[in-house]
Image (cartoon, rainbow, N blue to C red):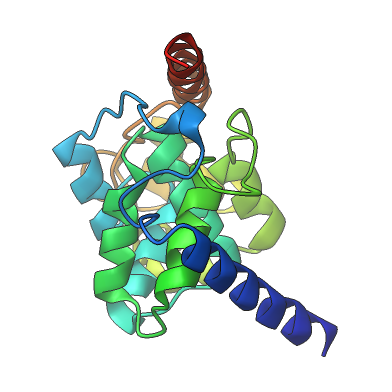
Length: 213
């Protein structure tokens, strides 16, 4: 019951924000992050939309979205953080894709959620907080039940490596019937370096915006 009430509060909160910032679907609320140098790599965006990033939890979530038109809120946070921070792709592209796919699409909540994840909105996650998809996967899908359902390519992998198949040795790949780069993609980005790249981009935007104030 309390969780349901909280969700209603969030819905009302985002509707209030939308009323205050009617242009928020196209414009970041925080001035510091209105001019981030997004990479917007088309291949990376396609890999994200089709669930072929090489990060099982991200891929499972996006495939679920494409198949059912729905995604759990935790997964929405994971994939939106991955798109905006790891891939440094404009949150507006992600918001538009969700708008196209979601059966429960709500403008205020969707836009608010994306601006929260991208650190561009009101009360959003700090720009230096970047979700680690592998850690999130281990924490919220420890037995990889969800992953195995939507990413069957990795279903034979045993242990924690199912959350990060890139760690498999050649022998393990043969044993688990999955050849990276053939049966399942290599990670399209290195999370550690991508995190630092994102933080640098946000810092640069913040610095430039304050120079022009």
